[in-house]
Image 1 (cartoon, each protein chain N blue to C red):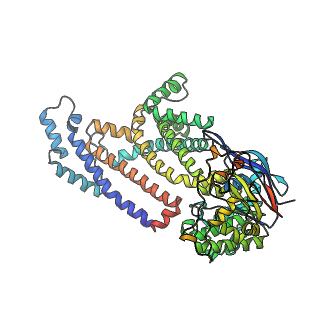
Image 2: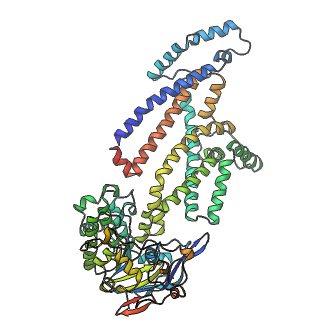
Image 3: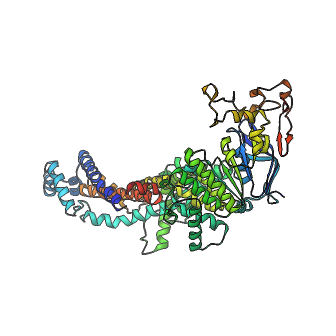
Length: 316
Length: 323
């Protein structure tokens, strides 16, 4: 098992290098630069050139790239040009917001997606199945920014139940956090819940047809045990793959959601960094997000081995 | 009172083109400790009969359209799911044809046996473990205690079928239904599993129903035989009667198409029954075997032939019995 994890971690290195190269290339290809944003509208060309010189932006690109890698390998992601604070510090402040939002949305997705998918499979072709699948189609096809705006109008503006935006740190006020995060989390989770419900349903239907389910029934096991133990343990193997993809989508979906609900998370941080050509911030932020995604995928691989003994023995 | 009495059993399946009967008006009974062989081609209704008795057919699409199944005096067809689950295991247990896929791949074999015991009895972890090891030894798994933590994919087909037997025997059933228990196995393993089945029958004092398309398996195991064709019983007889005086033309054709070890093959090939089983949606009127039967006369297609006694405990449904 440790060897599996080690090999996955090792294979993450080329991914990180490739992603940072692409990010570097793209951010430098788009016109404009940070100097204009720093110096303001009235800046003279001399001032701009001076800022560029001070930041090392007048050096050839390969030199800039080499300097950045050199910094990163020494554990330094550089300093944000716009905020003036270290990139790593800016990320660490914003990360709990995105992390909390994603986790909340993941809990909603798993709770509703898995249970409605299992229920729909058990009651295949009944009204329960149809209602669950209609809701999942609505969830998949409704754009989540649109739903977010509808929910703000209805729950925040008309009913006044929940705030329309803004962030409350969890450790300052857990209930306030819950209030601030509920609408964003629902709007973020909706599409993924629909997706997970449909995949859980089709996987469960497939598994429930297997011979070992008939064996479990022939043994006289209670229905609950047949479904939640024998069927679910097998269905979880493909479902975990989907959950891995869902976590990646949560992190990227958080960008839009954070902007709509004005939550100060990674998504908002990166959006502003890109708009202001804050090169170190973009490079560092993307690197951290990529590392998180790779981490999630390693976790999925480990879960596979935990769930499926055939994978476990094959790997060792 | 017989251990199992099946009377007038008709099981149908709802399909897009209407309801079709997989099993029709099946009658048989089984005494405690008896071994009943059920033989017939694939699609003759053997497995559906067994699964109906076990209550394992998904309903819908399956439906018991008529008849009764009485086990130890209790009517099974009207039991709730919960009541039926208590019969499966300690009352009736079943072993299936496909040992490769009948065990759950993600649980150890020990777990799959222990949970069977625990579903029906209060058993502590230590007692459950000890009983499971004992069961594995009984079905001939070497170094049973160590194999408890093995997963199905680590076992051979024969060993998996032995584990299936251990699961079936875990609660000492009064009746064991073995549906094609050896079909998926190598010939040498087949004989071992059949011997094991009979030994276990003696040891556990249970009745046994062996379902097979292989008439040789019947010869080795059964006391009494049912021959099924297109969802109906066409002949019922003590095992000696089937082999010495087969009455129904279908039974005779089945026997003729089984290779005999002591006689050279005539003309170098095995005789086969011409034609195929009738489509259940368009079954012929009258005797279902008539279109494939050498002895068929126009009267055969006029009405279903009744089951007629031809000897003690021996009956066949054919109007050409004397021919």
